[in-house]
Image (cartoon, rainbow, N blue to C red; front, side, top):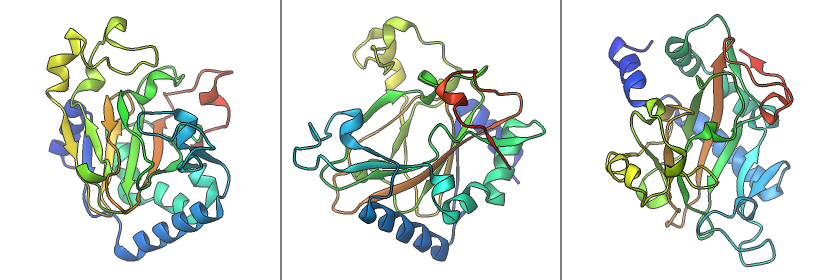
Length: 251
């Protein structure tokens, strides 16, 4: 159970780290499954070239062009991933944060294993996940499970605390709704950024409306993170959008 202080921290900062949620045996199974699916190139997946973020290979035919950025449909892909989505420590914490009678996973967003592979990983600039999502409100929580060490050198998460409560002018965003880093509105905002370093088995909870970013993996070891998005029954996807393309999974 979360303490009152932890719940308040999430409400104020938009994120919270739960340390040591997964044990070594579970982490080993998750990494082994992930590496097997990457080796076998089990569909569906997204390539680094599909998003063309800074540092990504220029095309599928260029060096590193077949590098997988994320393995999609994690919940449906393997029971080992689905079990983590249902983990009592995770679901209990989210229920305390968002309330409601039902806890749901949206299978259309995240629901993946994010990878940062050596040499060919990319930079993700400051954004809100909700920028392209279509729901009746913004009360969605992402769960980010570190399958290994996450630090500055391998592209760990950076967060702008409290940014889930910000009103941001359109002029401060580019066409893809990333923060324009040299815009006057954003200078003081970016100074507040925090590095969220994680140990293997740590779980990061963060508002899907919170601005976050990540750098390249500059190490020789792959980084893997399991990611799901949760909401309660009061948060519903807009009909005929991607957010509603598959029904929510009730836990």
